[in-house]
Length: 265
Image (cartoon, rainbow, N blue to C red; front, side):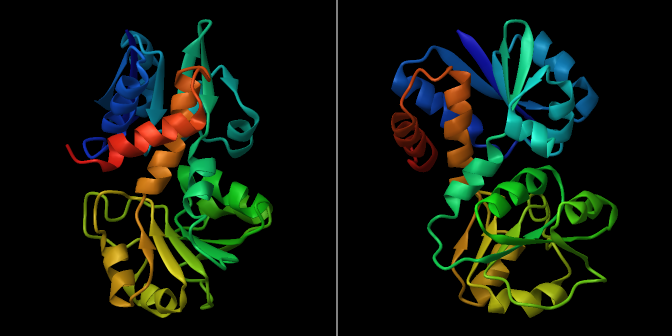
């Protein structure tokens, strides 16, 4: 039996085991998937190998460390310097990023979206901003501090700190911070959000399974909202495909995974 896991801090909330184990069972693949709470990211490689894993997903805050420990990287992971999926084969760690293509697919349901404001500049933003830009969206980034924005500015993104923010209209506003995951915080100052949220066409929070303060605010303004469940599903389909070395049809994986994630036993 092959073993897979998800590493994160926090990781207790993760639905990845439910999703992957249900799909392993549905597709008759002999494997198990479980959670590993990892506080010290520097122990990621050591823990991965000592657990005897065939692969893993990496969530906040370890995606940049995951990038650093891989022996081989696919072109996209290499370009964004962020890894959320690792596969162990031929005594090497292979790193991939399924977050960004997963997120791109998850927002297809929203119509007439041209401009996107991302809140936060961490590992998920690092991967997602580039794929959105390549797909033709105009992407801006708002972050508390300047230092994480420098590389985005170099690559041509419009970037703001809370202090330098210029009020304007964005079609889609996306929280890519962990604000609201294990607290009741907003991903940006409330007075700033009150100025821009009402003018948006839709609001997305990549945190899933929880009505975050950010989503509640959007609902006060009667806006369409989406939590991170669809992104979780879509990135999970791609990760599963890597884990099982392309043995299954992507449509079959998605069907089984959607059932495992959204069907309450």
